[in-house]
Every structure is written in C-alpha cells, then in structure tokens.
Length: 67
Image (cartoon, rainbow, N blue to C red; front, side, top):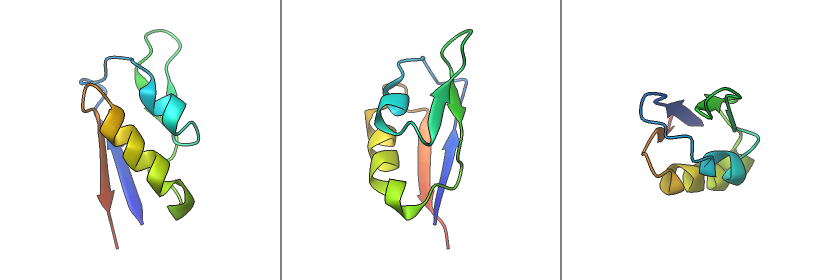
C-alpha cells in the first residue's frame, strides 16, 4: 500500500501533481498550495503518484510503500 504525504511549506504551487494525478492531488483556490485528496491511493494510481513525486519542483511530495 502506498502512503503519500505532502509538505505544504515546501509547495510552490506549480500544479504538476494535479496534472499528473488529479485523483490524489488538488490545489487550494486562494494560493495554489497542494491539497492531498487521497493519502493512501490504490495500486492503480501508483505510477501516476510516483511520477507526481518525481516532477514536483519543490520536492513537497513524499511517497512510501507501507505494508
């Protein structure tokens, strides 16, 4: 199982995560900061979530494998 965390203090509001995995990430209207919609996404979303982690310019997304 995947466990996703975000660090809002690092987020620069680029929105790459939302474009890559909209089922898991959104952005706040007022400032564009990341909103985590699904902290434990399904395996079907694993590739998109890992790509979102990789393309985040601020390194605000962390994905871990949990048992």
